[in-house]
Amino acid sequence: MEAEEEMKKGNFRKAHELFDDLLRKDKSKVHYLLGKADCFVLEGRLMDSLPIYSEAFKSGKVQPNRLLQFVDALTLIIKSKLDKYEANDDYDTILQCTICTGILCDPVTLPCGESFCKLCLEKQEAKKCEHCDSSFANMSLKANVILQDILEKSFEKELGATRLRLEGNNLHRKRQSLAAIEKYLEAEKLNKSDHLIQSNLACILISLGRFEEEPTRLGYYRKGCALLGLNKKAEAVVAFMHCLARDPEKPAVRKSIAKLLHEMITEGISCSSRGQKRARTANSDSTSPDEDNNNIILHRFTSLVELVEQSKEENGTDEMEGEPDLKKLRLDKRCCVEDVECTLCCSFLLREIRLVETALPEEFAERKKLHEEEMEKLASVASDTTEDVPIFVCTLAFPSQPCPLHIFEPRYRLMVRQCMESGSQQFGMCLHDEEKGFADYGVMLEIRDLQYLPDGRSFVDCVGGRRFKVLKRGMQNGYHTAKVEWIKDETIPEEELEHVNTLHRQVYDETKSWFNNLPLLPRRRITNMFSEMPSCDAEPQNLPQGPVWIWWFLSVCPLPLDEQLAFISMSSLKKRLEKLQQIISSMQT
Image (cartoon, rainbow, N blue to C red; front, top):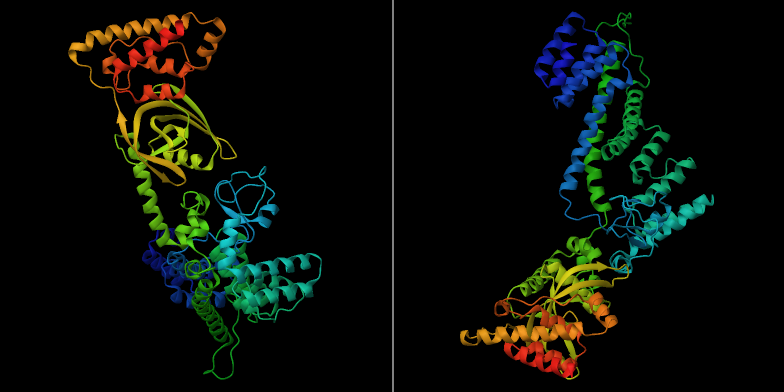
């Protein structure tokens, strides 16, 4: 039909004209009246549609499914208030379990970072996260004690009510309904806004046929069922519309509401069909039964719209009062920022970051700024900065030589993680020193690969980089730091360049001869653990850290640590070659 096509296109004025033309030809045609009423609804003129709907009911039989457009319009009124409430909500629902929608009780944090009630996860058959669908089938469900402690401090009454509700659930499963009701009522005294307590209590009351017991405090679905039990159909329709507004992907609910609405409108009224002979009273001034019916139907439509508008305002306020208030975290003196800090680095624990950002915004901003400053300092390590280089106190490393590490101490696990996070991927390594804590000279290690183990340990594949001299020692987040001076080989004077190159070649040949004369077994072990002896550098004077083969020799040769450390401290290639020549000569003799 052309009028309906225009209505679908949004040409409401044209559709009105077409429907009016059709009605002038056949005034009592129910289909045209309903089409015109739907057109008013889609145009946003809900009140103008009510007389047309009433006229349609008076003119003939109206099927319940023809009221779906009207149901959608009323549901949209409720949903507009919900959207406004959600837009004004400054706080995340991080303290709520999205499975049961109640406050977290014995919270378990999954590897993905989402937290749920332990009991809710145990009931999950699929063993997958509700948010990201990641599996937790092989995970031991242990409570997040940090999050639980925060909840206990700030929501003591709410958690007490939750535990009483769970006790009531167990009693209900054992068919001890009266004892369960007592538990729910006790829980309600602690937390009147817990919708799960209200819903469970309503379920038992409805099953016992006790519809009259405070139906206004129940959840929308339970409330609708209770109101139906009390034969209050208009109020029940509104309650079910609130359900539909919160979960619109329920076509069966939408049709059920339309059917119930139809019953409410037509209850006690016999709608006349077209052509039916109308009874008239003796007094010509009095109204006919059809006119009385029309007034009743119109009144019921109008009353329903008023009920929806009224419930929209009332329930919007109730919902704001019913949600757990995260502001309590900020106001409760027993809950402080230290509750979610790492005891090593004093930064926020990763899994609690969302909670801190939501509930403690000022503290979060302050710590975030401090963290960014620390990361900026660590990132500068990759440049020529001399400030706060992280130091791993262990053994000696040499420039250009691989240095695999097994990191297991918590402070060094933190250090490596922060080096990776900052982007520098570098840290210094020094020998231990009884008096000073660590030696005066060391080598920077560059991380090439990092493998984390499930227990927090890690295998780090590093290679030696720049040498440095320690100027000042410090401490940060439990590990050592140092202000350093970078060591580079001095520029070789032009008049000495030829002599140094000759010496370089001579010492290289002597070192290679020593290596080749080693027994086969130790030579193979050295090759397997390190590498073949590097080739001789053609222009050693252009290498800031000196020839690679020298550092290779020092890493494979079992020299005393103090002698190896002396090589790292030298900035003269000539002196380093002369010292190495002495060592090779002594080893060959």
